[in-house]
Length: 139
Image 1 (cartoon, rainbow, N blue to C red):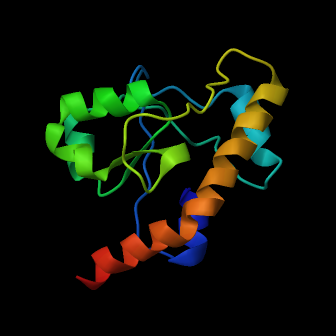
Image 2: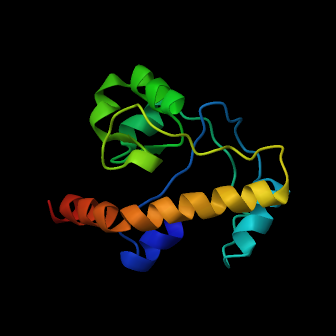
């Protein structure tokens, strides 16, 4: 996401990643780094962070990877419901929809598949995401 937005609107958005069950400060997995490298992306500096109410409140757009994540986000900060979406269902913000499979602890091919899946959905949604970013920065 960071790379796609930076290509479209350099310096206009901050893209963050946080997990419902993530610990703080852990590096990307070896397979995560390898999967990203295949697309000329370097995620080796990435460090995990746990999702917090403060991060939710700062966000203009939240893309959840599963319906359960969507529900947990809106339970933490109910006012975030109108800006929380399932990645696969965006721009519909219903909490009902398909998961993005988490490849953690699985083989490199699973990481590659998840990377491709996320990339495909971000590509499909990029025009709408950029439109929302432009509306926010023009306001």
